[in-house]
Image (cartoon, rainbow, N blue to C red):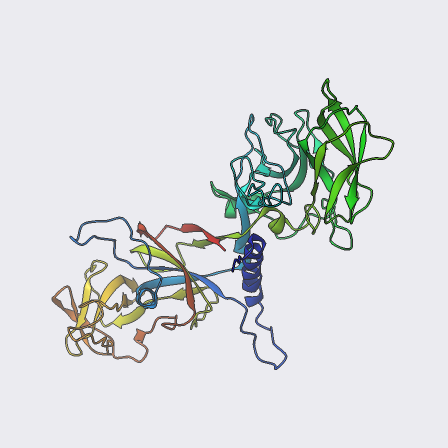
Length: 478
C-alpha cells in the first residue's frame, strides 16, 4: 500500500503548533466540562549541562549527536540550569531564503509538480533541477528589499534580469518577460527576530487588499499557461478558451515563427472557479493545429491569502533571549533545548531556575565552577554551578546528576543534601555548612520528568558572564 503525509499537512502542523502556544497564553480557556483544556502549549527554552564535551580519552571533542530516548531526557532534567518561556510573539513560520539573483532562471508556480506528463509515462513534471514537489522548487524570490514575489511566468525559462519592486496587488510583468505577484514584505521587527541566512519569516496573517480571493467553490484562476507543443499554422492574436469547471478563461497568441508554431502566448482573462480544465482553440478565432497548451491553476485558497500554505512554511523560527539579569549563573552550558508543558513552580511567569540552591552559614573563597560538592554526614554529592554572595547571605546553586561523586554515590544512590550538613568542595573540608534555617535548600523550579522535551541542540560550550545576553534562533521543521 502506497501512502504519504502531504507537505501541506506539514504546514498545518507548524501553524497549529504556533497557534497552540498562543492558546497556552490564555489561562482562562475552559472546555465544555469546565476543566482547563489539555491541548494548549506552554513552551520553554532551556539551557543545560555545564560540562564541556570530551571524548573517550578525556580530550575536548565536538558535540555528539543528541540521543532521542528517555535516558537522555532524564539526564537533561538533572543538568538543567535555567528555563525561559517562549511567547507566541517570538514564534514565526519561515520559508527558504531564496534570494533573487540576476541571470537566474526561476521556476514558475505550478499546481501539478510531481504529476505524470502523460498517463503511464513514468515521466514527471519537475522543477528546473528535477524537484518533484512544489515547496522544493524556486518559484518565489526574496529581493534585496526583503519583498517576496511569486513567479507566475518565467518567459519560457528565460533568465530573470529585472529585480521586482512593485507592490501592486495585481500580477505584473517586467521587461525581461517575467510575471510576478507581490506576496508580502518582511517587517523590520520580524527581520531582526527571525531572519537567518537560510530562512525568511512570513507574516502571521495575509495583507488585506493584496490577496486575490478564490471563488466560492475554492476554484482558481489561470495566470499562466505552459506551451507543451507549439503546433503549426497559427497567427498572432489567435485565441484559446480554457474549458473546465471554471468560466471565462482565455489565452491569446502573441508571437509565432515562420511555420506558425507558437512562440509565446498571454492570458487575457484569468477566469475563475477552475479546479481542472484544458486549453482549446476558440471556434472561428483560431487558424492553427496540434498545439498543446497547459493551464496552470492558482491555489484553491486564492493568491497571497494563505502565505504559509502558498509558500510552504512547514518550519518555525523561535527567538528567545537570555538577558544578563535573568539568571545568576556565570558558567558554561553546552545544551540548548525546548520543552513544552513542564510543571513549573515559580513566582515569575517567564523565568525558572533548573538547579538546586543551598544557603550557607559563611562565605567561601571563590570556589571554582563545576567543583564536586559533598556532605560529610549524609554523603550527598553534587556539582557546584555557581557561588554568590547576595547581601550578607551566601548561596551555592548546584545540580545532582547521575554521575558518581556529582550526584550519586558508589551504590547509585542519589542522596539529598540536608540542613546543617558540613560542606566538602573538591575534597577540601570547609568551615562553612548548610544553614539550618527552614527553606535553606531550594528545589529546582521545574518538576523532574514533567512536560516533553521536543528539541535538543548539543553545542560547543557557551560561557556566560554577568553582563552577557544570549540570543537564540531555533528552526523547527515539521
